Amino acid sequence: MQNFGKLHPNVAISQSNLALVYQDLGDYEKARDLLEGALKSALQNFGELHPNVAISQSNLAVVYQDLGDYEKARDLLEGALKKRFCKTLENSILMWPEGSPTWLWSIRI
Image 1 (cartoon, rainbow, N blue to C red):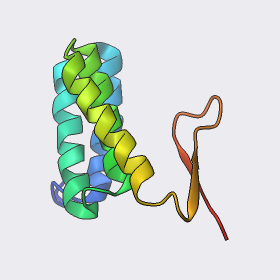
Image 2 (image 1 turned 90 degrees about the horizontal axis):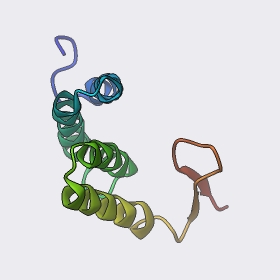
Image 3 (image 1 turned 180 degrees about the vertical axis):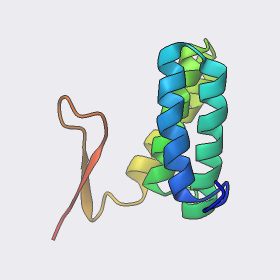
């Protein structure tokens, strides 16, 4: 954080990766805190409708599910789904290949 600042996108990526480790260790509160920071960074750097925001929301939702806060998880996932489909469907295809951990965008030419 010293080189980039708390809200730099590279810091958010590191926070998200570290959060996955905390999640695997069962420290869901620490994972939640890191992912909330990553989401805040994504919102500030990319705006509400950017795919990175949707990814951050999805990651955070899984931790809320682990914490037993299913309503918060649902709200985050519904918001992420709207962001993933609302802006770019006219010029692109959104797909989730079998076995892939993430969505893939394919731009129509």
